Image (cartoon, rainbow, N blue to C red):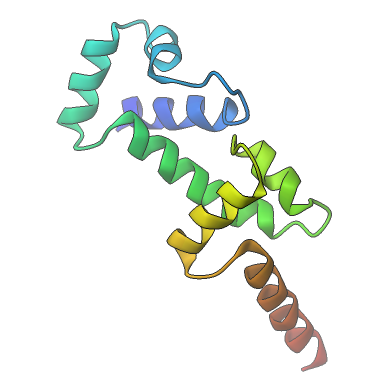
Length: 114
């Protein structure tokens, strides 16, 4: 478990790094890429799944900050552009980042009015 937590923490802190890849993670954990792949396999995951999971969690957290633009969120998560973030966000949550943010604002306003 701590192995996965270290991997997730590294991915999270390097999310906006365009060259984030399994080689960097392997180097960070002082193991070969193949050993890393085996260890991830034992945990029933892959590097790609870890990146996807971290991006999904961070996307929700970042999109809730109204001071951040959607393009800023996309960049922070290592997406090439807003369109890529929007496609992923829609796949994960069934709506665009803008729709999610508007719904969140409406919900917050409803709480304030009550």
